[in-house]
Length: 280
Image (cartoon, rainbow, N blue to C red; front, top):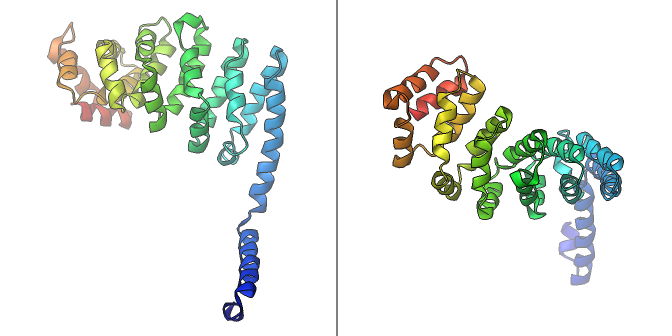
């Protein structure tokens, strides 16, 4: 290297090129390259099956997503172009395919790079469409879509995209639905979505706060309900209007509500105790 710096401009250029190549070779990871190559082949097969019109082939593609959701594969999925084919499966006319691909997607969305690719490909709009009552999907499909939506909502970029779609009324609808599991998953999604100010304001304007309070007060000491609902309420409890609605809940009024929150301080679950203390 010392000799090359004292050489002519042409010799230095050649030496620099060799050094750069050496650094590139050293930086390459054979294991990572092999993983990318393997995943690219799998995605190619998934793409062919996802394009099929038959339920059998699309279902095989949806099931193949399960094999890709392991922690060692997640860092490479954005690079190998999986996202468009996941969306294709979510938009299938076959509900079994939609449900299975939605469940697999919830695991895939743990990876930030894949989530951003999913957003860029229009994935949030697809999930929102899946939970529209007008689509007449079964509760199991709606629940699976909401689980993926909850995973996505943990990223700020997803919350911003959802806010731009003005779809808060959908969440209000599902908070009032017949399926307890759908109501719970909606509250869980809200615990993340309500971190976004625009969503907070639209949710309050749409009348969502009384629905959350009612769920909490009628939880029957169900820790699953209590944890999800109080996590959502905490995001908006700093608004005076929200506190007024919470403390005005009938029957019981402010005393009844405070008794409920105080009872949560005795929960055997630390997350519930912590959130109840924060709310109080």
